[in-house]
Image (spheres, rainbow, N blue to C red):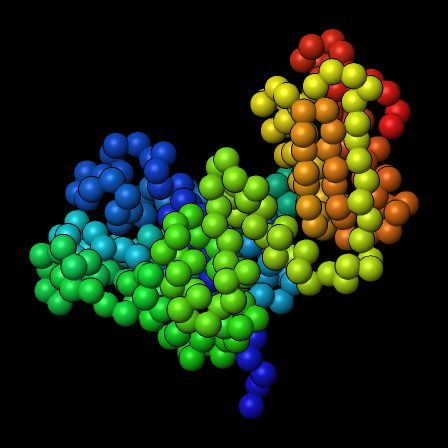
Length: 297
């Protein structure tokens, strides 16, 4: 028998694809939040890169999503499937360089980073039979994860859950995913998006002895007290990590310093910090005429 594999279970709406910020036209047949029109499936920035990194690390990626709009007569199971198919297509990298003259691969031949999608069309307040009931597949029930583990040969105890609602995490723990492996993403939290969650998950696979911690400090003032500057520094650090393949284990920022823990040796970490300083100083000079980090520290 093949050994069970670890997975990352992913909520769909507002974890992988935009939902709350969609235009009103997306809800022509449904109440806001019940996305059943594939024309409005739009990836959250960074979602494809995060999924690719997790897949490359050996995790099986499985989408689990509540879609109670079917029970509320806003669409059909086929509409759910169409949205899931559109999402999988957007998570199907072609690996063809942008300036290449080669045509993109036909959709059926693209290999999506998503192994499978499970959907619960049920809602107890619905009107469409047989979905107008509570069901063990509907989160916070564990049914979708239980089925995925049985059908795909997954090990819940070594898996992770990423979602934007507590019910996502509750479904995972009910299915046997350890609570410390359930990550709630929220814009103002330490894990604001899927990219940050991927960093946390990938960091768990790294030997702590092979890490380095380095800090950028401003000589004076509070350069990261400005929200835009803070966001720019954090996003630049993540972009460098993505480009260089050096995993970020932790990013900690206060008003005048940034501490980065990286899965690399000390010399590599110092090089990372030097590049971060160079890029963010260039951005700050273009914006305000002054360096963000004026002293070599």
